[in-house]
Image 1 (spheres, protein in one colour):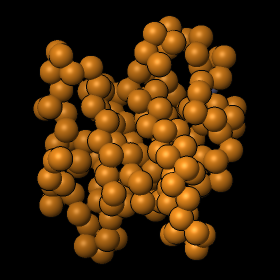
Image 2 (cartoon, helix red, strand yellow):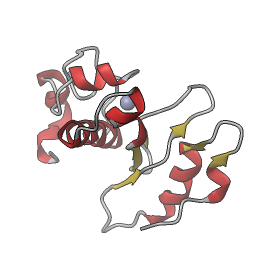
Image 3 (cartoon, protein in one colour):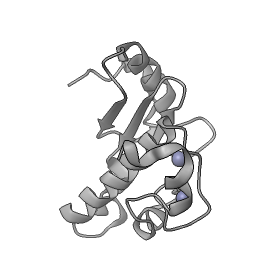
Amino acid sequence: MLQIPPEAYNDERRQYNSSVILDMLKPLRSPDVCRILAVIDEDLYVPWLNFVFGMADMESGVAIISLVRLRNEIYGYPPDNRLLFERTVKEAVHELGHTFGRGHCADPRCVMHFSNSLEDTDRKGASFCPNCRGRSGMEWYF
Ligand SMILES: [Zn+2]
Ligand SMILES: [Zn+2]
């Protein structure tokens, strides 16, 4: 467990700035650490968006996902751990996909499709479409 850097917290927004946290994670990469994926139970933002489900830094190979907006409860629905798990896997694969050089995909069923809302996340699968899979041997990694 890592301490969340307090300077990442924005009092007005009551959210954590995901790029500040990624900056903290970058030095933890080493030749034996292929990728870093942080999972946080706090709400994340970038200055130009209300929130983000996650964020990745392609160059340094570090990524973060937040569980907060993947939970049914915050939308007023009963808790569902199976759904929470599925959504977490999709967001994790998506952000890791970015660290392996994948951009966003237009196919709404592809895991690399951008999720603007939870409906987007629920619509897409946890795997890459043939087009995304085909580019530079992604199947070696997943
Ligand atoms: Zn993305
Ligand atoms: Zn795709």
